Image 1 (cartoon, chains in turn cyan, brown):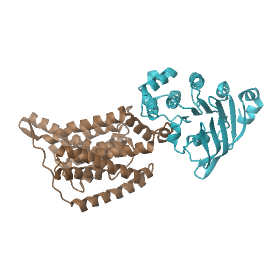
Image 2: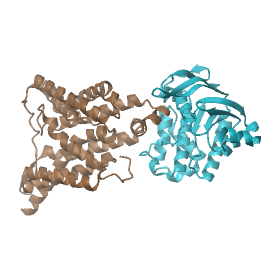
Image 3: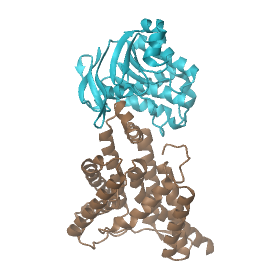
Image 4: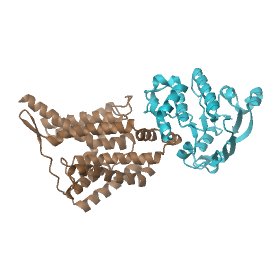
Length: 232
Length: 288
């Protein structure tokens, strides 16, 4: 079980998320929905430890997560940030290898898995990551996060600026790793179709708070609710 | 013989360029790669030189004094990173002020401990004959040393896990942490490696450039300019810039005067930076 408890945090003295609590069961796929600027990315950064907690905390498999970002990653927290942030002057291979090696995993095996999952990266293997297209970088950022063998994967706007065919590939791989490796996924998205296609449950955020949670079927059937909550 | 003369000028200019490159590689790591403007970098060269000198005076063979110099400068570098640099990442002017202060402290410490003049160690005596011209062997050996240093740093940074972690921590510090790299410790090590390279330079150049408290100052300006001209692909760029600027100024100096050589260096640097404000490697697609 992965828990975020009473998360309160922000930047400097500005509090952006207030008292946010979410729970994710092993192997669950959860959507985090809400309009622009409601604090979805801030919550993601809170979970990784990249912004300090003003109150509240994170629990992974019943263990309270330490404050250090590095330690949380090693406990199995994978993160694909909005904007990708691949290492630009490192090759595709190096981007994946460094993630695997930093967590004590076999580099060759990690690279093989990444290339099997994302054949689109094979012809680009030795290119610098900074020269890839936006979609390719997104795939690389996802492959890099999977290389640490996460228990829970945080995806922040993974479809933003990515062409539809790559979005489909991405959805396919996410469904597979979720099923085969039991990785839980928390995904913040504006692209509702993408979320609805495989999430099981959704939390909806408004002004830094979770306002409601619901099963995805409930949301699928209710256009008025979609409009109201997300402005879509 | 005209041709012999040309050849000897060319070889000795290449040797001058190599000496510049040896003094620069540490800075290419600290400033080029990490983006830290360490104004005390020249003093690490000086510390390396004095470490080697002291150890030699205590009776150890010169060759063995070089690793000692590397270890001493790496250790001091690590301490400086933890106490000063790590608190100032991203604050360029504060870093400059702090490291400028540090350079004055280190300089004065050297004056207090060693005095302003110190004995050099004799240059290992062997000569190389090109036609009628006789060139001292040790400076020529520096060409090999410079190449070896370049290859070492390149392999260290591209072929080892540490090297990948180091580059990741520098390029995207937050993401490096988020994939489990301890970037704080990695940065300390990288800064120490840069200082160790400066210490190596001070020690290996000791037979050519005697240890004095102010010796770092002589190198650091040209070294900084070399790394600035090099741009983002810092290692290859620095090698090319050192050969072009250092070699060019040495050739100019041997046909005219050493002042003309320096004028060449600074003038060409100014022109290159006017044409390529981000350095010659701004558009290259290479790792280092």
